[in-house]
Length: 301
Image 1 (spheres, helix red, strand yellow):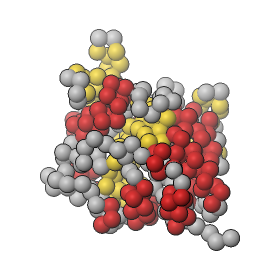
Image 2 (cartoon, one colour):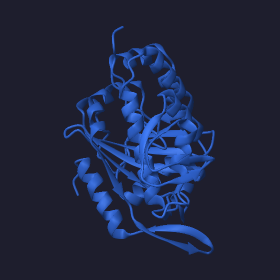
Image 3 (cartoon, one colour):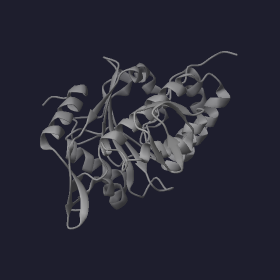
Image 4 (cartoon, one colour):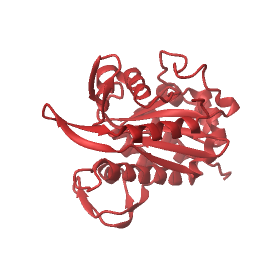
């Protein structure tokens, strides 16, 4: 049987789909998967850009990846928020995970609150506007996944292998130090744990990165159209993205960037305001992450 290279990048806890190979292109051409996934944005492009990004010309591009703790991707608080930039010229990705308790202005609400509330208040559009305001980085595309879908996709690729640096228990599962193989339910517990981790959200972010890279590695090994169909059926049922089928086809030129992923960290300190816990991100840390992402997108200061 003729083999086809399939690369699936599912960002955590949420998830953007980056797929390579002629088989995928054919699959989208004859199925409704892309239509089910497509959730166009109201705007044509970010106000932080002069125009829309041209994927066909392989320009640097950004994604906002949202993991929603609700079966409905259009509502609910985000359990995970990741800004991902891809630069095909140097074949690299940069990922910045925003701590869910980050205190910031919720654009459109006129209040300061936890950044993960933005999606619950105003859906994807409010989440995008809030993240752009927080980081001063344009968001070109979005991908939103409910956490049940995250489990399904890990199972669809046959599980993932991660390197765990902390012995802990979560969700009825034991995760020893060292190399660990995870199914979907185990992977979800693995990325959600934070209270037992002395590094807090930083440790949680590292576990998210481990699972994402595991998904990339496992997805790249698939050569069966039957397997591709199972994965895409899961994606179509659980993921919404502003990228349409044409955009996904153009993303084939970005596939090799998955081999070079740089994790950026937003640091700060926790505090309580009126009895509510917040993460206050250090201005210097935020500026450093902003500069790295903007430089990666080849944006002028």
